[in-house]
Image (tube, rainbow, N blue to C red):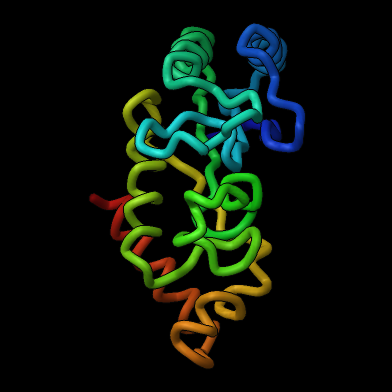
Length: 174
């Protein structure tokens, strides 16, 4: 039913919107009907000015236009965001320190973290037609072993991840 590809827009290679549109031209001509746009922090979240700061982030207008162009060619644009790990660039800024467990991992069980995740999801939902958002939670190997450990002591990390996933799913359902 779905045939697609994922483009990484987070590793110092944020494609200009015109180049993404050209890529959509190619994949649609090959019969693809989905493009997953992998971003870590390279998109605008209005409430968080350091999201994608100095990294070539896509504005909400850029994403809306990319989505409309892809849809015009029968390609569903699916945002891929991070809701746990891979957040080093965003978390490096002192303003975001209260959200940091480790250098690249968000701090679980903190309401400020879930406010960020809700804002991330809302930012994508506001500009894209799809009902899907990839909520990456991979490569968070040190979860619960940084600031979380200092604040809460030793915790079953599997239970911690499950609790976090449940909160993210709750936000998505909302």
